Length: 573
Image (cartoon, rainbow, N blue to C red; front, side, top):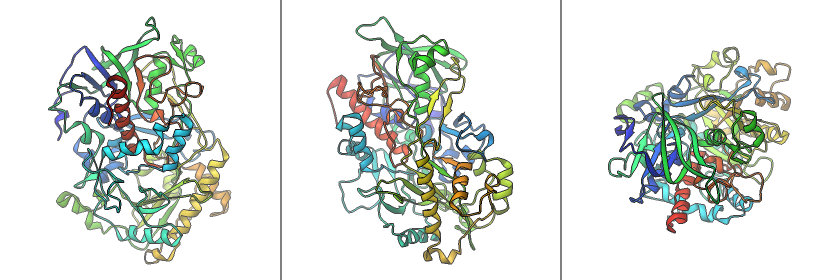
């Protein structure tokens, strides 16, 4: 299973390839798998991180993996201080977590699998002017990636036999079962929220198999690496620049990358294309370092402008709040069930890191705008570090209850209107980017999330959960002490004080019509005005989708591979 631990270079190295893929995350692994099906193509997959390890296999160990500020599996990026939120966070900043490891963020996420709302993809088709990005033409790519094991009446709606295993973890608590009934009592149907109708609630669906995480690396790369000799992998190698021939005609052409491995600068060349799958933070960063981005930004850092494009704009994220906690009269899990994992790969550690139920709703209008995530653990020493919560706030509000029975509910805003940016800090490729999340710059986002808070509290107060006697933790967040608890004014303050990111950063290399001046890519995922350069990851998303973005990123990798095959060989699914 850990063949990639053997060496930093697999099947290589060479100096020249047909394709260079930058980033072995969810999209990059899917893309590398599909492109390497063409055995005549030589492919280099470059990843800044190292291999997975046994600790990342354990679904319930997410907090242990990502809570350390020096976790070896993460890029350690922090947002710029939030203008409209974050008063209870250190430096008013969000930890912008994204994976630095084979498999990328699929190795450090909560494993929840959601395709998203059909209407959101049809909106993509309208925004981009290309119906190939509408649901009808995206659906086959989800089916191709899926090994979907959850019973469903329509056998043709989900895929079976694909590389990515999806299941509802078999260990399931009584508290979660009752939470489903409580949501039903609040008017939400219990059904498969990955089906055509997303409104409702269901047991969580996750990329877990036999009690172990299924990352993009395990799904797409591990099964093929020893047999596909045309796929070379270079780990622990940070790409610092895309090489572009500005004298090429009719357009400047990408012809390789420069990367650092063991403190030595190296070069690899691409005969056909360089493809960025570095994610919505690092893909725009790398474009700007290479002379593609907003003209004023590049000139400020004395980077020669090759192509002026709105790179790094249109940043959006799924933001929620971590301010809602309930105390109960008994724990969600019998304490002895923790011992089921080493013996049987079962128990709480086999769940999607203590998330067993979720739902989607539209408390303000008919657009799916809120997700409710039931996290069956109180805030504790590890979780508050994930939030970047001030220690003083944790100790005052949450620490007295961290070992008592309880759970949290996270209302998440699925369709934010606020937009942020990714920018360079300077021209040094090893410097951290400037990430301005700009949460709640549009006041409607705050009101929608407030409706989600009210909905979460209302669900937990339903009779179905009476046997757990849930009581809302009423200790005020100190930054909101001036407000009466449980008023709308208090919750508006609490939402802003403790914003929660799902780390679904997207949109920073927006795709669309060439005449749309807000776009960076065309709908073939090619960078405007540059030959041989594409971005195939969540950077391309033109607008938010009510989903968890590991699924979307793998879908884009699958679809991106097919686009490239069509463009270069006229082959398709």
